[in-house]
Picture 1 (cartoon, rainbow, N blue to C red):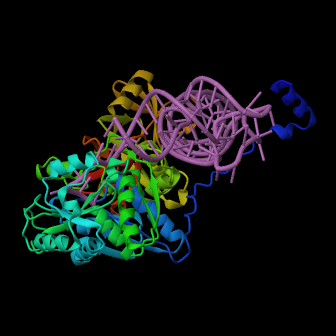
Picture 2 (tube, rainbow, N blue to C red):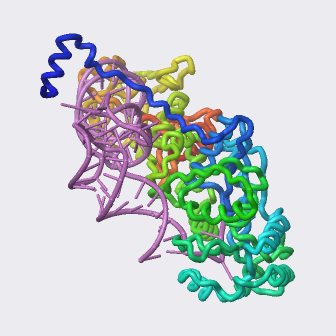
Length: 500
RNA sequence: GCUCCCGUAGUGUAGUCCGGCCAAUCAUUCGGGCCUUUCGAGUCCGACACCCGGGUUCAAAUCCCGGCGGGAGCACCA
């Protein structure tokens, strides 16, 4: 029987059967495997090379969400084991960013406090015969690995390895002269998993926190494995880019017989049109191109905050995206949609006239405007204006052009006008004219405040706005027919940052 | 080259493990109606997708095989 016939037959029985029923999207993350309430320990492990950017917020918030669900513990672990890529300010900025995001951190761990721990792990690996000190130059060593061959040092005894490691620690080797290598399997089909460097020498750059006290630095795979175990991590959620690192770290877990955390790798995120690279930003700030880490052109968390993007919107966005391991394209559009849900009900409305042009109003002595701060919430009050002759208001160039062409306009909350001899002639205050097709425009009083709205592309929209009360500072307002913006200062000039 | 991960609308996502109620979810976006003194919100209608080809089966988005496509790693960065 064709589908249409079935449809007709069913409709004949009861038309309600074919009604669409809406199903609620639950928008929740799946449960974590083997998670016990109160026992979950998770972490965020940023390198302190700068403040957090939008890309970091996924791992920060996903972990936070689960820690809260299972009433667990959240560790912020600063991975500062590469002294060449550290911005000392980041030790302060990262916790600030996490706090702004609403991430509850129970414990902060700084890896540069833990050199002795990594050295101890290294010793134990050596004693187990699972690590050796290699003094091959980097390139031939890599080449041998590629071919699945052992370098001459791989067969050294634990005693030899310990001696050589002592020499590393006592500055007996310079950079690239010796490394401690963790053995895995040289014949592993995946070349990315074969023997990897566990510790290396860096003595050309002092560490911002430990100076030149330590020159043997752990590589991430060693320090991460050690800390994930020692800090009692039960679940690790991170990006797919760490898939091969997990494989390497699991060797260390297996050598020690440690219980592995449950790993989950989500897909990579491509963030279009965002400036995220800390080195680029750093250079830009030093060169004066960017005003700072919170320059609104940047994709940093503090730049988003400055623009009026709310942390809850970022959280909702990542919750919606979820945990899938497909690679995705970040959608500013969707983030803005979540943000609008939050700011629209709370943002007070004001008039901001860009490209302002004056218009003289005649035919009336006094005009009074009482505009609601928010159309859906009259109880919040009104912005009031009283205009007396001679009356001049400001309109956007485009709106004034429209008045000239059409001959009529309604100024919102104020009055209706007819165009005559370059002036606006008062024609009443009945907003019923809108039903007749009269267009509506916003306006600003002649004694309004000079306003500048900084756009995310770095441009500035200048104009005249209503005067905002000082309480609007730091809040997101809506400039009608323009968009949302976060108010930075209300006087002597109005300065705001465009949200969306 | 080798290894791993992944392919559902413009974007994100549900469904895939355990085949049928999927003639495919929800959100966003876009188009339109209603409502509305901005924009939005709300509400209603509409548009757009199972990477391709085989196979198994009464039945495939779902299972199998083979392609193709995308991404990541093969660092003395994290």
